Length: 238
Image (cartoon, rainbow, N blue to C red; front, side, top):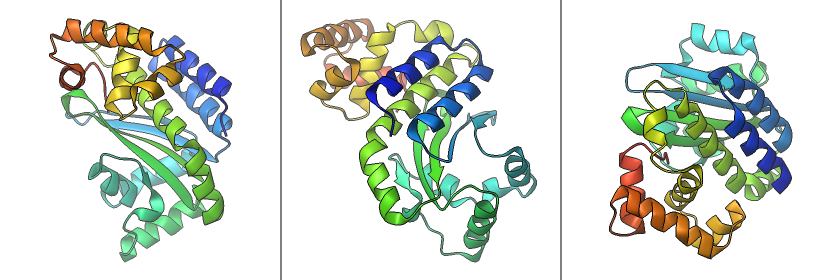
């Protein structure tokens, strides 16, 4: 399991990444920090542009594309219909096509367990951040119980960083300071103020300053309105 120090290092590395290609190194570090077999990040925007990085083998990535598995992958289909993270066991694997896909994936070392976090960003962007592993159900359930909050946090920071490299995004994202974006993102994800302050290692008083500053910049009536406006403007993704 990633420690607080591991998470801090991962987030610092994400913040320091200056090119899209650098995210590959960070996702390898994330896989190692969480001690899973694989981690993958993939996005698709409204224009159909795609980007992905991760630790799956090149053989599986090429095979997945050649078989056009994007059309039948229960993880993609199921997560596109959801807003909350999902354990693969909760997806619909009942069809023969789905079972054949799963068997093929496991032959390529993907693992029998998985946890995927759907993320929706501005301009129709849809992304998935996934951890997968090979272990028994009890071990995986215990892992998810311990790490789900941290995985979600990393996923959203990862997506936010990836969006910085999308053309036309940089100037828009600077309307809020990095700390204001962090605070508003965590609030949008359902964290309480106390949890946000703890996660960011700041006092609740300091957090209140960030929230009020963001609210003023967004012209929002209250915190809920500020979160809604930040999402609508594409300044944060949830």
